[in-house]
Amino acid sequence: MMFQACRHIHESGFIEFRTDSLTGMRARICPERLKRGIGVPDIPDYLPEGCPFCQELVTEVTPVFPDGTRLEIGESITFPNLYPFATYHIVTVITRDHMVRSFTRDQIKDALMAQALVLEKQPGYVSINWNYLPSAGASLPHPHLQGLSDPVPDTLPMKYITCSRDYFEQHNRSWWLELCRNESASERFLDGLNLFWYAHPVPVGEKEIRCVLPGVTVSDFKKSVDTFASDLVRILDFYQDIGHGSWNFSVFFGQDNERDFFSAFAILIARINPNPLSTSDTAFMEKLHHEPVILTLPEDIGKLWRNNHVK
Ligand SMILES: [Zn+2]
Image 1 (cartoon, rainbow, N blue to C red):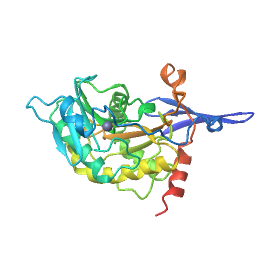
Image 2 (image 1 turned 30 degrees about the horizontal axis):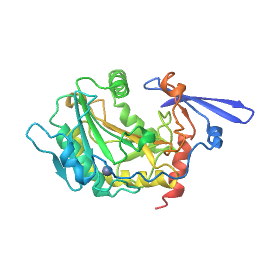
Image 3 (image 1 turned 90 degrees about the horizontal axis):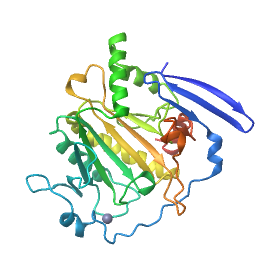
Image 4 (image 1 turned 30 degrees about the vertical axis):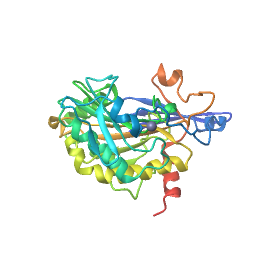
């Protein structure tokens, strides 16, 4: 059992309480709340004036690495974060364009490769992250990735590392293999992609989609960046098709000595589109209770995917 579920029926529908068997993390799924209609259909145009990531300014105002350079691959440009919140913190501007609706495979591939090349030189626990648009927490709308490295894993990847280590010690097999076996046979599996993608049964965010990567470390990731990028652009286009132009994305990596029991993995969640009232999709349940209220059943993401992307 990957998760436990318990459904509470009420007058206008149901609430499904779910608990992740590995980590004990919980979520409640309440599809009726979708009817509140707090999403807005489109995203505003953000003007490029004064944007430090646009071409005219990016090489003038952003910091450089100790050797005086920035890393340029394709359209992407990578440099240290001027306002870091990690021991090591870099930024990759993904595109020359200030506003992008649909990304190309090369744009995503080049930006991810740049992050991997810089981060693999760091000793710590590495993640590659993306807040897209201000309603997802981006301070600048110009598309950019953030790479972090710290001596200990952050709270969520720490749970997965320690719990999957415990699982391995108890069962003598990888939880990640069990996960893939279980999810590939479920309605949550997203077929027709290169890598293993599925809607996690106990999501941390709305319309959450995860990828279990073939490797463990950020150096391993270089081998699958190409196929990962092809998949990710299809999934981001799928998000656009179902009304989300804004998202959070993280890829978490482990260390060489964690190969037996851990797998690098990516989490993508859809966020509400930017809106004039600054209405948020995150409130006390998410911020204080650490128990997200989710609007879409993960099984319905699988259904939506199959209906949208008929091979
Ligand atoms: Zn810009």
